[in-house]
Length: 214
Image (cartoon, rainbow, N blue to C red):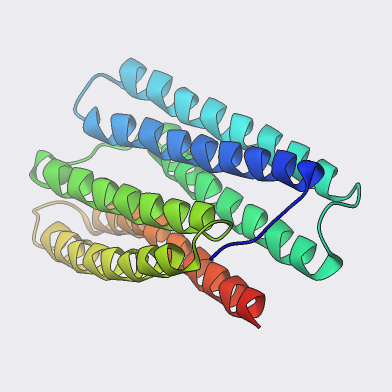
């Protein structure tokens, strides 16, 4: 069971889904950056810029969707819920950009010993986002399917936490300075934050579904 909307609302839902894809693309660009941390700094710089460009595109689409909604589409209560969801989704793209900035602006050197761990962490964060993305799309069409994806989001976020702790434990076992350890620990937290924020959005979607069922 889903919801039924008119033409104006359907146009906004299309923008909403387009924004979801733009956020997904921002994370995909970050995955590419993390996979190339062992390359020369110029390559890292170029990939970081691609993350920023993708985040800018997500911002642009978000503003389009919000502008359309302020024109009067949807009932006020649902409009507020949807606006909040779009803004929360956009924060996920912002998190990805923050990771790229932290790596590039600090000319961060990542020890070879944790390169695979960081890739595993960003891939799990990406999977977590894809689950909440699916939940967001399904909340207009199939409440039951949306709930299934919300549960998957929570499970993936828990798996991300496990990788995060393991990676931090490994960082503090390395023979590097304390300052470097703290810098890398912060980077790990930033990457895992993508997954954490995705779970936060899934909670918001769950509330919307509960309200729609009433």
